[in-house]
Length: 267
Image (cartoon, helix red, strand yellow):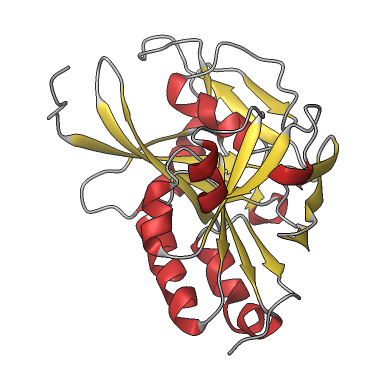
């Protein structure tokens, strides 16, 4: 297959949440490519327009709501028949938007629960995000015991590979264990532990990356990578002292969650 050399079209989309933790999907109106498919609302970034500015404009134009604040989340490149797009997804908390939803382009809209969506078909570039939306924004645990949190439909648990049973849908595995295994574990979601940028490049098949961050150099590298954009959710595991310094910076740059690592101390 020849390389797709079409210019990249910059697009932003918003994952808007309500007070119940449900996320907003809207259907593409008649006359647009993939009409009738469901998506996270958004659109093209105009020339000399910032991403957040474009996101606010698109939501006001399409759905009549005002976005006050949005946090970067995931970034991906997707090739459609009609265009090659660079997609940046933003999370919008329930407290960060206002107004009454309106179908200003004749589209439909629906509130959905992560892991239990009821509308179809989905826009191809958005499908991969649905599994990621089930991942809690707050987690606790360790590399030895795994992680646990709550999402909109209940308890969410990630089990270390060596302790996992076939019934466990979410598995945590180190990059070295993965190399010995020679293939991804049979699980709905595979969380791969990385510790440096070279690991990050080798863990491209992960559903979630857990970056074991142990010093300020690591912390700054993670922050730089988040600003560049990540294609899968990134969870930071770090000692208390690093979490105190970097938690808000990481979260505002797009980290999925920050977990305090009580097993190590900052050197």
